[in-house]
Length: 121
Length: 107
Image (cartoon, rainbow over all chains, first blue to last red; front, side, top):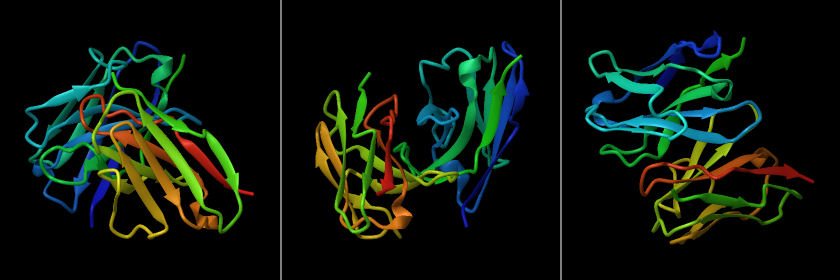
């Protein structure tokens, strides 16, 4: 059974940093692209960042480019999102999502339950 | 960047009604479109990919159609458990943009 479990969220002051993790199990992690999607309170879904299975390709939304860094450790089946220079508008539930098929198609068949990031002083 | 616009933003329909949600891309995206359902307080669920292919386990009352710039998600007979927000998402190229969502309620 595929499982994605996010952690690392919390309350942080504007300008601060957080590192999110997503522990994956139930599939061959290294062969699937992985993605972070966020959802601000009461709002819709926003794609944040994606990484190919090998880690050789990374993609970022303009809203986070230069501030967030996606990475993965295929030996630990874990996806990360390092978030720096956080702003109030980064407040959201952050979901980790798995590509439906191998090879990097960037639509998602499994989602974690999410971790809440709140940026506030 | 290609924008994805859904309409309506919300709708209310009776049980058994046929419901149609539209997603329009500002440029052609072939059939690189997925639809998701997010029930209140729950995680998004993939319903349809490649514009019209039903994800395994999804009820057949859900259908997707379209290509290029105009796409539709149809619920042939609305059920109480279909109360949710529905999102389209393009995946032909970066950024993998979502539509703003359509909330479906029961009248």
